[in-house]
Length: 113
Ligand SMILES: Nc1ncnc2c1ncn2[C@@H]1O[C@H](COP(=O)(O)OP(=O)(O)O)[C@@H](O)[C@H]1O
Ligand SMILES: [Mg+2]
Image 1: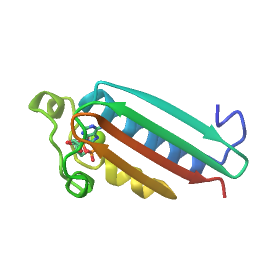
Image 2 (image 1 turned 60 degrees about the horizontal axis):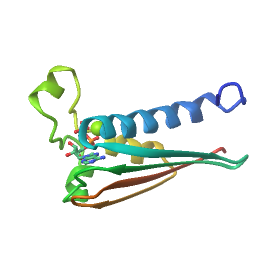
Image 3 (image 1 turned 180 degrees about the vertical axis):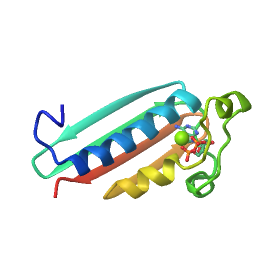
Image 4 (image 1 turned 180 degrees about the horizontal axis):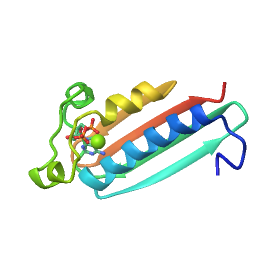
């Protein structure tokens, strides 16, 4: 869709990486999520709001290489512990909030220029 709209390839790449990592985390660690994608000529904003176990220590979860992936997930090539760090790197603004036993919410903003 972004390609059809003529969005810059570098921006599309950053959004694809952020969305992929956020989606994989929902699939691997949460139960379900609502994803909202908003776009204006200036900015793209993604909200991934899940129901799940939440993250007890966000600073630790953000650390490169930290992962609680199971041996089964690792066998499939997941669990490098780079996802959240990569989302932050590819976003212009990144906000994460989490409540243990309830869920996690990511807000990811990418500027068009
Ligand atoms: N949506 C989520 N719900 C619960 N825990 C999460 C979620 N996203 C990430 N985590 C926790 O943060 C850790 C780091 O996530 P990430 O950087 O994406 O690495 P990875 O997915 O390779 O484990 C995960 O191993 C998991 O413990
Ligand atoms: Mg991940």
